[in-house]
Image (cartoon, rainbow, N blue to C red; front, side):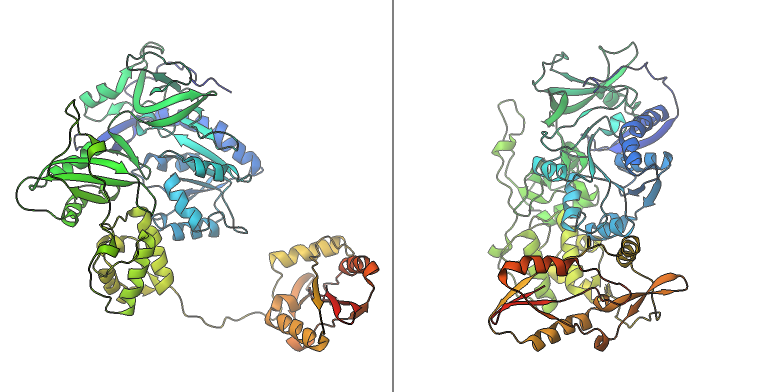
Amino acid sequence: EEDITGTDLPAPPRGQDAAYVLYTSGSTGLPKGVVVEHHSLATLLAHHRDRLMGPAEADNHGRPLRVAHTAAMTFDASLDPLLWMIAGHELHMVNDLTRRDPEALTALLHDRAIDVVETTPSYLEQLRACGLFAPGRPRPRVLALGGEALPAPLWRDLAALTDVAVWNLYGPTETTVDSVMGRVLPGVRPHLGRPVAGARARILDHRMKPVAPGVTGELYLSGPGVARGYAGRSTATALRFLPDPYGVPGSRMYRTGDLVRQAEGRLEYLGRADGQIKIRGFRVETGEISSALESHEDIARSAVAVRSGSGAGAAQLVGWVVPAGHREVSPRELRAFVARRLPPHMVPSLIVPVPSLPLTSHGKVDFTALPAASPVDGSEQVGRAPRSSREEILCALFAESLEHDQVSPDDDFFELGGHSLLATRLIGRIRSAFGAELPVRALFESTTPAALAERLEHAESARPSLRRAGRMEQPPLSPAQERLWFLHQLDPGSAAYHMAFTVRLTGALDRDALRSALGDVLARHESLRTVVETVGGGPRQRILAPGDARPELPLVYVDEEHLDEALREAAAEPFDLTRDVPLRPVLFRSAADRNILL
């Protein structure tokens, strides 16, 4: 294992062409464009080929893996899947509507048997709820998580997935996507891991001096991944991109603002040292949101912070606003005002009017003294009753998603504490309830049950009408049938794949009724009355008519002493797949009122 500080490389040549520019949130209200050069991406690709892709390729016997591109191109995580493609793997592009919808995305990942998925921990929780790791369904071989801290409970759950390689990726946009990465393993505390190839991670105090192991300090990153700086923002660049006093001459380091400590040779994340926050994978400067709020003519001052969500769960952005005059601005109006200026993940879920902002002795906003931000509880509202069954069902679904007792038709989803992750979950429930094709953005445009009910009137049905499908006379074997047929040819007398179980029946038994009941089971399920025939040199299915597949149900008299042996012998009797249906019932009788059905 390399040392946590990583290794030094010569200072990269400056002035290369930029590979890309990505914009991040800015504290002044103006986004900052991070300029990343080609050599930074090339170095990251070389590291990922060795540490991330190499083991996955070996597990897949050298064959290319299917990689899903599930991130917006405005998010630096979108570059990781492109690196997989450059390394020779199969890239599956996911459109915006699908990637934003956890149910649709989970279905796509299953249908295409995707091997590599990268997402945020918050969104992974949505995918898990939609059955990403459901038994019997294809699951990814590699799962990469980044964009925000990985909670300890989720870490433990993922560490238990022995057939999935889970990686925790960390890296500000300013240090080229991934700077530090660690494998999620059982029995290990959540951590960021160790630096990627060529990178150095230093934990420094306020005097820029290294701290002792186990002591909290601010994380500084250096190496070839450090970006050129912020496009056209020399002052902002100088504040974050500093000369590296511990590196080779000419090298620089990036001040992340993240508080970490070194424990057992790994970096552990402890929070932020500045006004930046992470909300559902996005890095946000609260100052940019405050600037947007204060640009409203009726708002004098504002403060923004993250608060733990309502009973529904995830963290929420909360804004506190001080009115500028006598006109009271509704939270709904302010949310709409901010939404026209900032992306959805930066729009506060809750806006709380206050007469003034409490200050600390140093004149800064005292966030601990701000009033608790609680969404309007629909159960306390006096609202009209639903006018239709559609409105009634929608009100119930809103209340269930928000964990409220009740919601009225005119209650706003976001004013009640809803956010983007809950929106995707709610839309999924609405689709299931109404069988309608409804995009997630519909909830952002029609935020009340009443408005959404009108929208549903014109929504297309997501359920195609059922119709009888044609079928060839002797269809090919299914994969499961083909597997059994191969094993039957390989070892005709084997009972290795027999599934035997017994049911003890006490009392008087009507054997004819039992035989008829078992016959009904075979009649209902074609797979239980299917034999295999050779047609044209290959195996094909022959489905028997219900009347031709009635079970014999032989009766065997046996005493209790020899019962177990008789059951084992009967269970081991081989099947002839050319004539025997794959269900064989046998009745054992040890007394007139004691029967055992095998």
